[in-house]
Amino acid sequence: MPDRSVFLTLSPVFVNIRAMNEDYQRIQDSMREYYESGATLSVDARLRTLRELKQLIRSWEERLNEAIWLDLNKSRFENYETEIGLTQAEISHLIRHLRKWAKPERVSTPLAHFPSRSLILKQPKGVVMVMSPWNYPIQLALVPLACALAAGCCVLLKPSRYSENVSRTLKEMFSSGFDPGLVSVVEGGHQANTELLQLHWDHIFFTGSPNVGRIVMEAAAKNLTPVTLELGGKSPCIIDGSVDMKLAATRLAWGKFLNAGQTCVAPDYLLIDRKYVQSFKTEFRKAAERMYPGLLQAKDLGKIINRKHFDRLMGLLEGQKTVFGGEGDAEALKIAPTLLEDVDPESPVMKEEIFGPVLPMIAYDSFEEAVSFIRKRPKPLALYIFSRNREHIRTVQERLTYGGGCVNDVVVHLSNPSMPFGGVGESGMGSYHARQGFNTFTHEKSILSKGLWLDLPVRYAPYDNRLVRLLRLLMK
Image 1 (cartoon, rainbow, N blue to C red):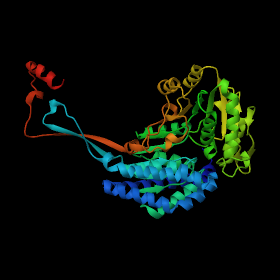
Image 2: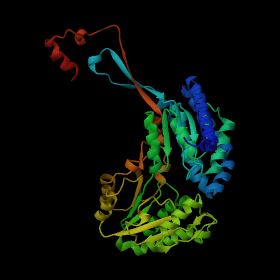
Image 3: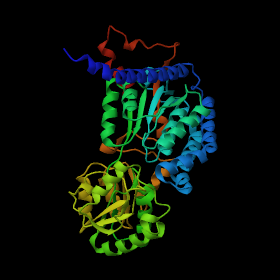
Image 4: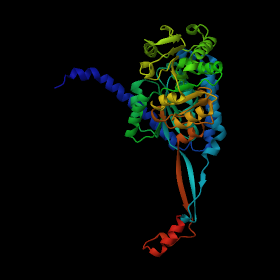
């Protein structure tokens, strides 16, 4: 018989887990009650909610600036550029287009169903959960949340425990400005995620790593809950030498070192025509030093989120040939902007998403070699090409599968609220931003309304084979 002392020792843990699960169930029940009241159904109510969200973010902007500085060392400019400003632009886009998107859509009806009309009604999915990451803890929490509110859903937001200051601020912000039945924020780590995933949601929206994405999808499958997975991967950049190298290097350095490289759509590695390697190295170093004077000591260089990720990144640099950078400050959790050359495609730095200010460079001898290199690897979330060669651009866009990207720039496609964003294959499932954000949290309900003034008896048994010809005409 097992020793009772073991159970006595562990019982507080089980009690805490049970209590946590009951708390989350109560939160969800409260949200379902709010949703079932119909308070989110009208477009006017949703627009009012979006405007209140926009104003709430504006009034809490200083607090959010302070929190993100503590978590990631982001400057006010970078925070507005990549977090608050982008979120506000997305909300404004939702407000401008919501009435049109939410309107019932009239579609054609086959002659066989005369007299009738067909409509597609836009219905909220219900009570949804948004699980957001730590690297852009404001934008990647609030943009999908805003899309869900536009669709008429109630939202439980689960931010990352790694960005603890932003997570705490978001919880305080929504507690002060929104009914908890409409929006609730739950803090916590792995255990909280596990407990929340056991509940039955109407949709789960997750942003994070492919490994955790698999766990989320497995948990959702038990309840047949639909999921949106915004993941990551190794997003390549190609430079074929037909562009202004200074401009290409500057734009690439900006996108790579933004947020200390902790960006899901950051260029993860560079493929470059061998003939232009030397000129690129010169211009890329100049660009990095212009933007981050002193590199490791630069005031605008963001910090790595925690020691675990800092050590992982420094480990990836071991044995690599460094053009510049490569130094780290463990106390400040900073790593200098770094360029690597002669990188072995089988080395650890090419086997996982880097998620830091380190750019491996691999030279190619033919453009087809670069395309083949990318095709042999999992489908990336983003792909970038710097080129004036239309054939090269066409080849990349037609022959390679990836979530999205840019020609002659990096990262900025994510900032256009008129374009959807999402991955494919291992880099994600589903999309949001633009109308796709509204659609993600919306069920399209098909309704055929039949007139009562005429009924064609052709469809009723017993069947007359002589009428097959007429049936074929009706269903042609």
